[in-house]
Length: 296
Image 1 (cartoon, rainbow, N blue to C red):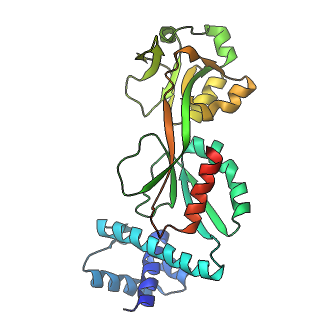
Image 2: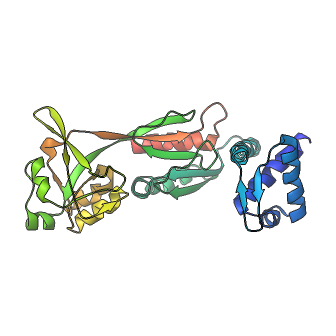
Image 3: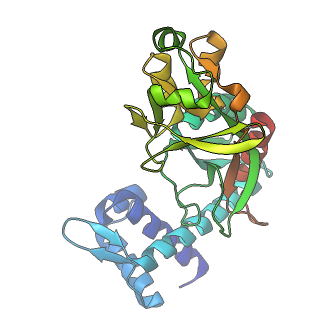
């Protein structure tokens, strides 16, 4: 099998996974289902492994198939980059798949996309907002924006900024329940928290130069700061979230920062994570540069 045939085989395999069946992949590539099936058979025979488990209802990737898919997507993206760079004299272009957390993506990343595509009109931005982690190495996205400590991996991470935490409540809530003056006052307040924290969540504080944690309890938990901020603005309780998710509500007076004298100043780092190296597509490089410029 020559290079052109192998590239076509990679395209067929990626299309089968994307569309979920041989017939759907065939329609997308203008091939018959039998031609698609033969192509997959030839790949598996050449590699000596099973890539797909086939039943009458579904196709499932094996572990080898998952690894092959990631490599296939990267190779196809590199081929696309090479052809498009020559066709457009090196201008960044192509589909850029971006993964961001729900709240941060909606509030901080999405508002920047208009300016980015005006600067780079040949790039198609495909953005997905989810608090689930995507697998960059397996080709599920080109760039992911992540908060907090990063696990060891061969991926490249570029710091985009930091977000500090703030405790807030609405003026209406404080009028009804009183304003906490010291951290221990929170024991008599409805503290809204994240649902991915420990079963008995704690909030950190600093008093007289000493850090300590305080257990808090509340009636609602959520998986993102934007939801918690919305609940707090509605007068449901007190919450502790990233400043970015409640900045507009604070500026408008719908939320009031609390206990700032005891704020420990803890921050979460924000990184763009991607497959780095000399072969990083131009569209990835310019997007990460743009985020670093705008989000700092």
